[in-house]
Length: 134
Image (tube, rainbow, N blue to C red; front, side, top):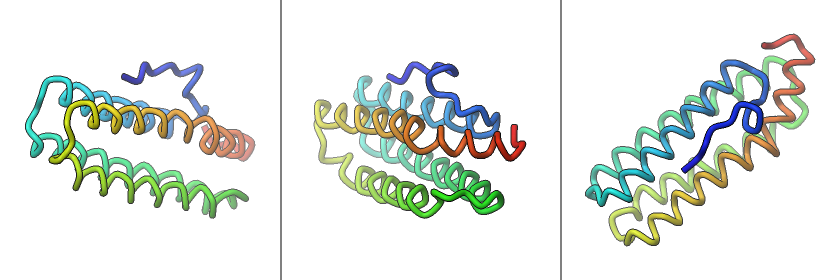
């Protein structure tokens, strides 16, 4: 479970922080579904929602990067594409995973989200705030 903390996970841009919090909620919902033994189709549906919202969020970040000329746009965008590819693979594999394997998926997603925020989105947040974005 991801325990959302604005001090730890916030980037200082309201729209992005709200979207990050929503991503954490979706990951937590998937974790709950796995722990509750939900059927693979329900898990795939939740992963579909996560993929769709992730793509929407990434579009938002990439729009900001392009609009304000962010110097790290190419590598940041590459990280987004890599995660979407991994999410789509997880969606395909979820039906064949047992509960322990599925928990590794949740651990990965939680780790990815927090690391991505700290390593990629925080610098973007600093950049955008310096450009006057709130």
